[in-house]
Image (cartoon, rainbow, N blue to C red; front, side):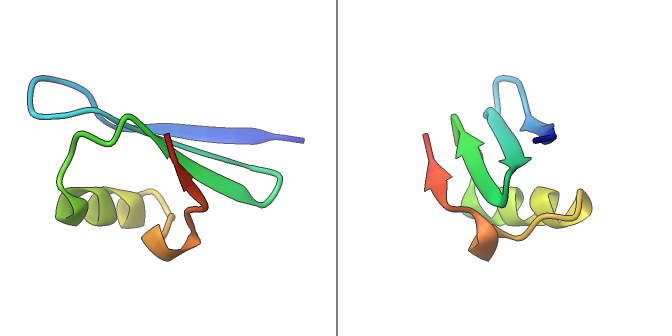
Length: 55
């Protein structure tokens, strides 16, 4: 199984990591606003409605 990951944000304004693999998508450490997370996910080919978990 291949894993894909992307750091959506890292810094004083917030952190967020997106991980996709085996048909599952999760977000880790979601310190960004929902609007920013959606915008950044779309930029890398993800969609918030396809995320199964937030850790």
